[in-house]
Image 1 (cartoon, rainbow, N blue to C red):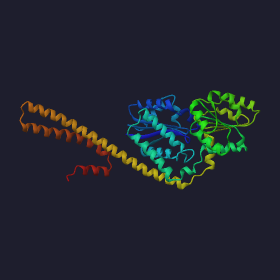
Image 2 (image 1 turned 30 degrees about the vertical axis):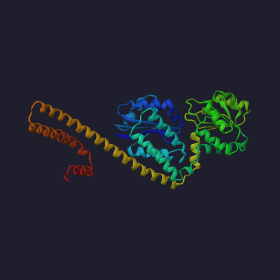
Image 3 (image 1 turned 90 degrees about the vertical axis):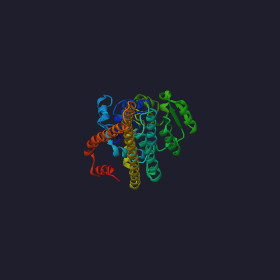
Image 4 (image 1 turned 180 degrees about the vertical axis):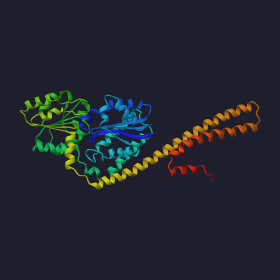
Length: 413
């Protein structure tokens, strides 16, 4: 059995590609169930965040079956030209780096951990993970906590939202006088509220499809609330618009902004789109007096202006090395337990059959010496002969050290 990961992220694919393969909620559940139906796949978990989509599997043939399946499905075929593949220890290391924020566009960011935990929960609900992947992801959460606690990775992270506010402040020198519209009510919106309030921006409206959640967040932060259905009627009122939703289609089109600009007498609008797929049509960027930034734009700015201390990365990687060893030890114990269980069942099947035959011989009046002779010869033939054949098949695949250990196993004490 092989643990592997196939995926694409901000390093291997542009936002145009990533947003086509972003899976949340029901879409993620459907993909999990489709993959789990493959006979070679034992366990599968799909991680889908704003900057990556990754398929983790425990399978008979490693990643080969998933790669062939993706290449054979018209809707997923373009995925394959942007994907990377990691197997066994490399796959384990990759996951540990992801949850620790070392593989993020913003090194050290913590949002990815929550997103991975959500993916883990979806896999549990769909019963597509059991032993190996379940334990692997539990280990990864321990790694993330350890890295966050014992290094300064988090303290060095410059978040997307922090960068967004810096950009808006360059566009509007008097940001505290501007009106802001936040679309969505998730973690990013809550982070936006924190940064806007700290910059004395208090005229804020939260716009969300789920009324109860949106109203609650607005009330807790002394903001106004508007339903998403009312967006086109109010959009012209705002100087700053920040979106972060899981909508599969854009919420703001070019026509919306052109109409808003007319009503605003062409006063500037700053738009920050943190949605994947995007919440705002990309053509809007070409309009005068409009400043539109996507998650990739922000990533480029962060990369140019941000240097994390190398010591923190080194410390995090040492923690990851240690945890890889821990997980591999568990994997080895788990695998050996499975081998022992299978061997015991194999011996039980043989002995049960021999006992049944011995009882029949006894009932038929065979003498005790004949019965004992039958039991002895049967056990010797079935256990020694069949085990010998299997050992001959296995032996060429062992290195010198493992071959010696196997020899020692059968030496007399």
